[in-house]
Image (cartoon, rainbow, N blue to C red; front, top):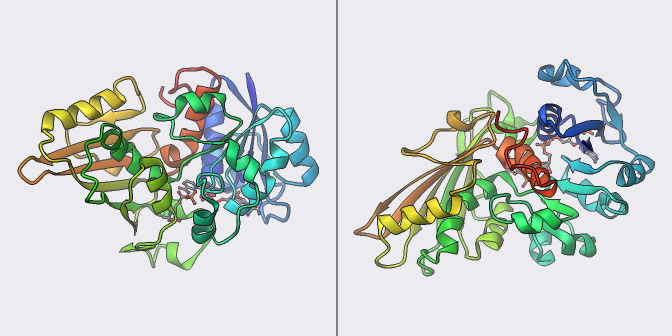
Length: 337
Ligand SMILES: NC(=O)C1=CN([C@@H]2O[C@H](COP(=O)(O)OP(=O)(O)OC[C@H]3O[C@@H](n4cnc5c(N)ncnc54)[C@H](OP(=O)(O)O)[C@@H]3O)[C@@H](O)[C@H]2O)C=CC1
Ligand SMILES: CC(=O)N[C@@H](CCC(=O)OP(=O)(O)O)C(=O)O
């Protein structure tokens, strides 16, 4: 058994991790933490998340001494915290034997100038950044297996890269035309704290972060080609549907396209190649990525759709996939019953 602690356990991704750790056959939950002056300090987690009412876990305010002891006392630490907190704590948390899985964006971008431009603060943890491995589980498993720090991908990049990487890796994309990604997320993507933009009365369906969302450089970095990415906020709780339009190299056939997806995901149980365009309801509360695509051979344009649950494959269940890789267990352990 492996001992794990979760910092930021009261938030949406943190609470999801608590649920996943509870149901995992090889993981034991050894601590759940919130910020040092959290309004939820010392509450049982079930008081905030009724689904976890049966779980014996109290939200403990974090401190430097707790951070230091976690680094030595547990096997895995999950950071379901704001980017700044993950950034500041990483050196201390990795000073012992513990491995850290960070759900924030603090360690995903290797280029610190790009990081500063999109995250609004300068990166000061170069050594941790150098060691961090991008945790897109289906694509980087051999580096994930060896890693001490996992930068768990963002939710939109997970949906987008799952759709695009089979095309990029097989050199099927026309390099003169950027892939165009339009993606809609449910409100849980914005986190649990109350805000006007995510209030029930205000949420409709609209684009935001147009031509400037921080997930654009993340998708570009791990695809290796520039993209146009437009996120939208929708009036539903969980899930992301990404519709990706691509121009393929001249002469690419439907057969080549089908083969690229089948080969990329042949032995990947979390990715489901569907026979029609997927819906968010097909994947909500599950760890799956559902994909479907169609090519117009006469124009060379293809449309690929990707559906995930943002809190699961877009954050918590992908972090568990990484732990499964690091502990050499089947990737779906504790995730698919
Ligand atoms: N929601 C999603 O779909 C996804 C989120 N992410 C990323 O995962 C991380 C967590 O997201 P999410 O669960 O949505 O966020 P929430 O806002 O729902 O939860 C954040 C958690 O962090 C705690 N926290 C806040 N400030 C601090 C601090 N300074 N130090 C320690 N703990 C703190 C909060 O508790 P308290 O304030 O009471 O201490 C809470 O437990 C973020 O970095 C987010 O960008 C990544 C992919 C998808
Ligand atoms: C709907 C919504 O607001 N979504 C969030 C993305 C959540 C996510 O993936 O977060 P990180 O990359 O920050 O870890 C946003 O657009 O900022």
